[in-house]
Image 1 (cartoon, rainbow, N blue to C red):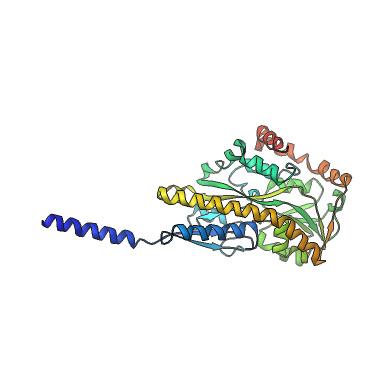
Image 2 (cartoon, rainbow, N blue to C red; image 1 turned 135 degrees about the horizontal axis):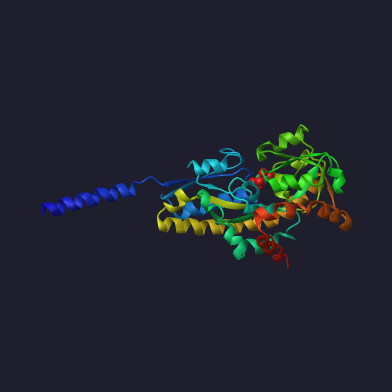
Length: 326
Ligand code: LMR
């Protein structure tokens, strides 16, 4: 009888400890504004997780480089200081060469082609390219195609010659601007507005939603609708964190993330046209539409960059990406 009582007491204590266990905390850090595809995706993920895993998991979202700027967020993740991030695919150079494929200029015809490639076996395989570094790619998220903004009209590659452009930390993007004799400068996203405002740089490349939400259009009188490259994201966590989660929680988190990404992708598609229109309506920046002949000059100048990176990226991978363009 005494044994039974002791057993019940131990069970009671264990149950008590279980119910009092602190919720798992997920810090989701990113560098963009909240009214962007990534900003909205992060908030949707938080909402879904806190509905479905109430008391078990808490999500804290830190937008606008509040917690870590883009130079630091991957390092912070490997140190266990942040659990979820979604850097642009252009920011993984230190960790893998293969993701450089997404930076090749004029590789994808449109965002649907990018999506087909990401969902293909080759694209899904790339989610695993960070595993040797202790990182887990949970999925892709769209932002959109990039445009060129500058303090002078850019119609042909000659117009970019000698101008300083801020780029993300990508060697391919560096080569892309060198190919038109411009000067690329790798700088964190959080510094771009001030660099443009103070004229420390002449231009930059980004998506409509980033140009709008960070007000770059207010300090860049010309935007060339070049659609010359893609800016998408990989949602990443660390193997240490992810693999140590209880199975049922990991499954719920994956489900919530996939639903949040679906919403983020819808917002990306909407913002690609809505934010473009808001910028036009603002009359702060002139939209430059290229003729086919002008656009072809940019293609001819920038496409040779592919062969510079073919060995690092892999010919088969490039062919798979090209094949997604139908
Ligand atoms: C940039 O640095 O321009 C972008 O990667 C920012 C972002 O995360 O969209």
